[in-house]
Every structure is written in structure tokens, then in C-alpha cells.
Image (cartoon, rainbow, N blue to C red; front, side):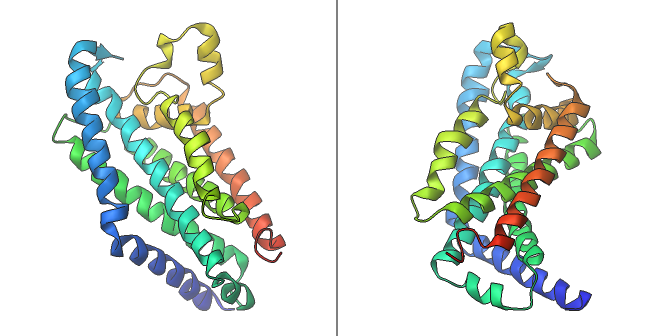
Length: 257
């Protein structure tokens, strides 16, 4: 295939994915907006008044970057895992695999679609946050880099989950029992500096800690972990999962059996 044909194939998948989540926006865009608004009201306004400051900022400002990242993570992952599993379930993935379209283009198309939804929801949550507090982006390029890499990482994670899933229940196991606990324990609502040395060490094994703190540093200029370590960790994990997903798709794992 020529570069033009590859670009058309990639664009077709991306447009299909974007139209999919925009068409059902009451299920894909509205619920996270409502959920995050409740977080802002309950944790930011009500509980935040009792907590006071954290990291030199009022509690509302401190948790906003974490809540934005949480919405990006959940929606990037959820879009790809549901969409690609649906493609498998309907057997339309077979039409893609027998076409001249390379596996790399298929993978990139679904990842881009997941990133589009994750970043779209992240933008919506950011705009909602402005009604509750003020945000000043201290390091714009770090903010953009962290959110884009994180969105890509969890889009790939959703793709891998969908590859191994054999029934609809399987696509809910990872978000429920792994993703949600790691997110809530990833420093979204608190600074890990508040923890004892042991639990702080345990928290450093949680990759979401690096994502939340990297994004918080970009927005507020404060972080509980080294920012360079955060960027390297996210980049290496994204590369590793991308190569693994590409290999799984090439081998036809969960598709050709």
C-alpha cells in the first residue's frame, strides 16, 4: 500500500472511532462530566474546606489535575476495550485482517480513537473545573506530553484487554479490580508525602503515581516524585505495551483461534 492509502486506512478507523463515541455522547461524554462535577462539589468544596491547603495550594486546586488525569485514563481505556472487543464480537475485525491494511495501522487507528475520547473528556473536565477553581499552567509542554502519553498508554492497555477478552464480562475485570484501585491510590486525592516511608515506597510501585504527579507538576508546578522519572516511566511503559500489543495482533492472539 502507498503512504496515501495507509493514511486513508488510518483516518477511516479514527473517524469511525470518533463518530462512535460522539454518536452516543450521553453514554460516553456526559457521565464522566457529571461524575467529576460531583467530585469537585463533594471533595473540593465540602471536604476541601476542612482539609485546607495541600502542597501549598487549596485542596480543590490540588486535586483537579488528578481528577483530570483520572478521567483521561478511564475514558481512553474504556473506549478502546469496548470498541475493539465489539469489533471482535461482530467478526468485523476479520475483514480488516484480510485487507491489505497492515496490523500497525489497525493498532494505531484504535489507539488514536481512544486518545481522542480520553483527551476530549479531559478537556471537558478541565473546563468544568474552571467553575470551581482557577488553574494556571506552569509548564505547558510537560502538561501536554504527560496527558498525551498517558492517554496513549491506557488506550493500548484497553486494546490488550480486548484482545484477551472472550466475553463482555472480561472487559470489566481490569477496570474494576486493577485500574480503579491503582487510580484512587495514585495520589489523586492526597500527597504521597503524607504517607509513612513504607507506604510511600509501596506507592512508588504504582505507575499512576508518576502520571498524576507529572501532570500536577505541569499544571501547578509541584510534584511528589521526580518529573524526569515520571516522563521516562510513562514513555517506557507506553513503548513496551505498544510493542506487546503489536506482537499480539501480529500473532492473532484472541482473534484467529
